[in-house]
Length: 313
Image 1: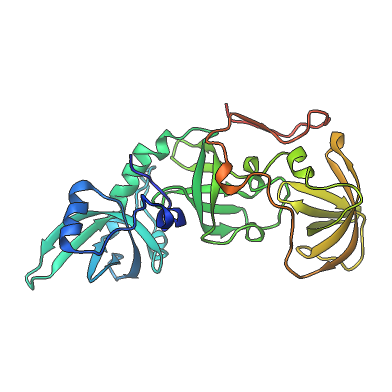
Image 2: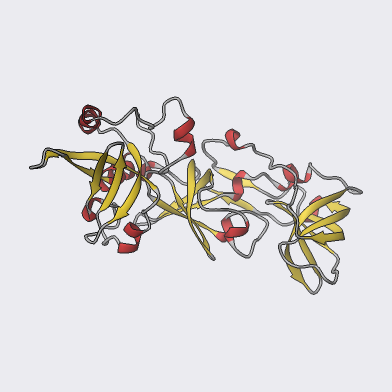
């Protein structure tokens, strides 16, 4: 079965069964066309007709505008969706190989056909609760757009990134980052929504890294009149007493005053704050140990009066 990975995925480059192909010859391209192999290559330029020119070893392949992307909803593809591929790696099928009058091969490629197959054979079959690989392609204030397979996009809303709230996704991700996500839903127009927080551990799992009396580092996430919220891990935040001079997104050395599981509270005292790099506790789930599917996830401890949960069933 084909693996419909995000375009330019590091997993593909390191896998023994990767899509990284041997030296590109015409015979190889003919075989790729016949067997509908998934190929990956960088986009060199976009011409006046909005065709993408692809580097194929000593050859140049062309993805015409109409073959640049697949739209599950049937709506026209915006020009910006094509222009922004320049300088990036894209995935595609070899659609046609012809000899020109000058004897050079004319190689037509299709990203649209690959995305259509990926959508029909893979994306349309995922269900809420499925854990799938993704890659960050674009960041906005309301969330991050992710490639979940061959350039097909999903939206990770800002409130689904982690339990610890952030003011902008750029404080958590950069373009090109790869990680797993949980499918939340696919709407009638084929738009995919995903979540990340369910893969970052429960309150108890994260709190197990800390003990009252310790002084640890955290990130200042929100400053209120009644206190300052400090992120100890992406899924664990404590509240510190207010202190003058502290700024959002600074690194803080905090003393853990107390931990109250039934209220999911961690009381902190800020010792110092600065702009240096944070060294926070590692996440509970290593990258390669996520479950393949989640029906139900509860963040809050059994003793907590407030319930924070996700139900994908």
